[in-house]
Amino acid sequence: MTINKIAGAGLGAVLLVMGLNIVANGVYHADTPEKTAIAIEIPEAEGTGKAAEAEAPKVSLASLLASADAAKGENAFKACKACHTVEDGGKNKVGPNLYDIVDHAIGTRDGFSYSDALKEKASEKWTFDNLNAFLTKPKAWAPGTKMSYGGMKGDAKRANLLAYMRTLSANPAELPVDAAASAEQPKAEEAATEQATETAPAAEQPKE
Image 1: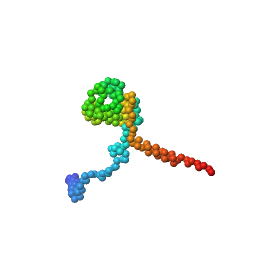
Image 2: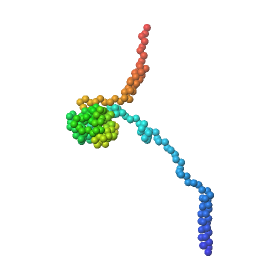
Image 3: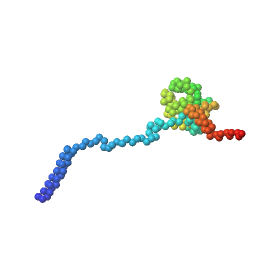
Image 4: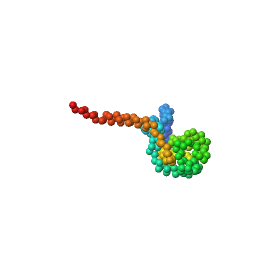
């Protein structure tokens, strides 16, 4: 009997606690918030992310060509030799002969069957800009071209290749001039002249 009384008292205590808990939850009910913490927005560090990439100054093709390495370009061209020849009077292969190609009219190499996409550009020339755009992604610059090459990544790498292609001529085309640099040069020269004038010692006056 004593054990039964003790067990009953224990069970009654448990039931009492459970009952009080249920009543308390019913009286003091708090809604669960949708967010369990305060969201703190951390600003993106200056100079990082897509915005910074967009703001990064892009080096002009003229500047890249001015410091391009034709020897590296010749090495890069090895992958092109399967489809192109570069000798003066060389035969056309899968692609046209590329001797003296810079500033040559587009789609007009004798004996080669060009796609309509390039024939339509016959009024233009293979300028450095056009060659650079074509080498970046041929099918984007000339939709419908038969050239299956996917394109060359890397501005400096393409500049090296163009520098090499420029050498494939008895009279290499002139390199393009960076318009921004040309505009700044007179200002720099004028500033240098003014500074030299200000710092030059004054001429001694003749003594009477």
